[in-house]
Length: 381
Image 1 (cartoon, rainbow, N blue to C red):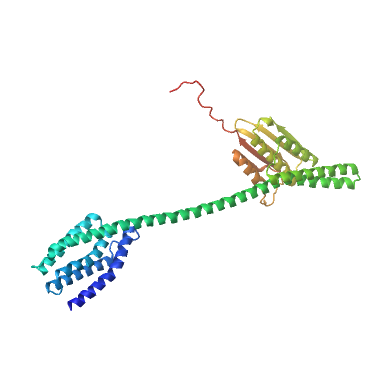
Image 2 (image 1 turned 90 degrees about the vertical axis):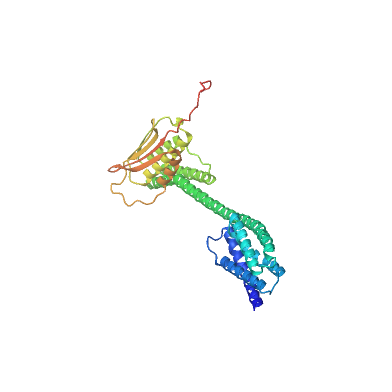
């Protein structure tokens, strides 16, 4: 009967060892925050039960001292292996001392005339220390392997994020280039197409009045403007198109006067302006002249370029704005001008100033003066 109970208890101890070791390993690796582990307590209870049955068998003479010593290595190692992974080393050593004393005392009570207690006092610490030496380094190696695998997964995630960021950056670059291309096409073709439409209409009127030579001259100008537009569109595609402020001022005045609009220009020293400022203000002149031709029915227009202490200002004002403007459509001309002025810190304002008058004003501040630093040969601290 005792042998059967001992056999069943040993089988249950074997079955409880694996889940208890797995739970202890998870705790050692930091995969669980559980403070209590039922598997470990079941293993401890079965260990105590098995040890008690062995001691009873020893006391009744069912087994001898040699069988008990052999069995101790079997049922002591699992519980100390779990303790090696679950508790700090000082507490583990206290458990070794307590377990050795308790088992030796119980063996002495079970067989006072035998020598199992002295043998157990040596076997139990050796078995426990063997479990510590094997399980602790193995757990540490698994923890480092887990950390390496976790770091590898994090690196893969970071690589995926970098790839997605590169794709997003590429899409943004393409979108920005499309915006630039559309803005430049609008700026190039806007005024030229308005001029072509105006001169074509004028040529038609001259032809109806049988002023053939004047009509031919207007169509020749239309042909020249169309050819110039072709060249500028090709330059837009290549991205190397330049623009000159002086030429734009002269061109705007010529186009507006050809449309019957009295245009007065006042410009200071254009060449003293920085090239980026001249280019940005040239686009403002071109867009403003295009808007004067397209919108309203202007008779007078004034273009003023002035430089002050705060920066350079360009103002285009005309008297052809409708007194009751209709709903504003989402044009891209003014938005494109603001985009061109933004890198220079410039601002653009557009709106009516009085009944029938409209003003477009751009202001670009002076670039900051770089600090020259200490003069050569100056005093040193």
